[in-house]
Length: 235
Image (cartoon, rainbow, N blue to C red; front, side, top):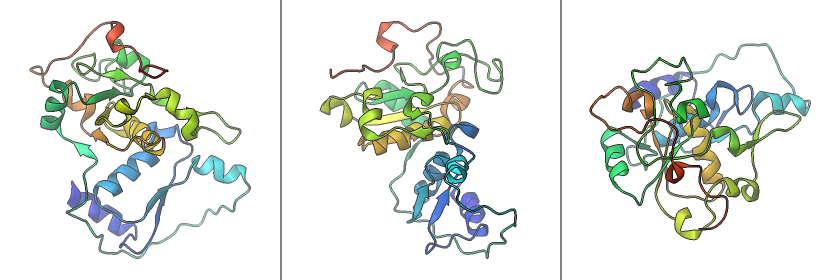
């Protein structure tokens, strides 16, 4: 995967000296594409990457210049940093996280996926099973954003923390976010990091991978009280 994305980003003109600014139409289009781009570049160890907050809609709302000319980038050799701390966990890591109560497992999917009436945003029967990863808590990814005249934007730290635990013990625990295949969870990962939660990783395979192995446990049906959204107040 590193080789594939290094080739793609290198063809787009990223050689290490350039700052990559990633944007999409708005922060809630494409299930969090800009944040997913940030996680991929950070995973590869790219030294200069940022997200345009609010996306293209925020840019145009401020009257910034636009063009319909197509840019032809000069291909570069993309510098993969093998020593970069990974933001991702794989399937085996996720199995260990499920078995470890100290790890906060955070499901960021839409409510119909969380309660198990749909298997994916691409259709309710897209995956062979519906449900959620055992022990997961839930914050729907939309809740980390706020509506503005320019479109959805991430909440400020003091506003987003009520959607995450306020207690110091919860903020310092390891976190692992998931969704269907990593985009919405990337949006939440960025929001949580902006809010000051440092140890946050992304289960890249997410429900698209976990649900397809019938040997892996899942929780089904409407969740009980222990699986309800994270507390709004300190523990």
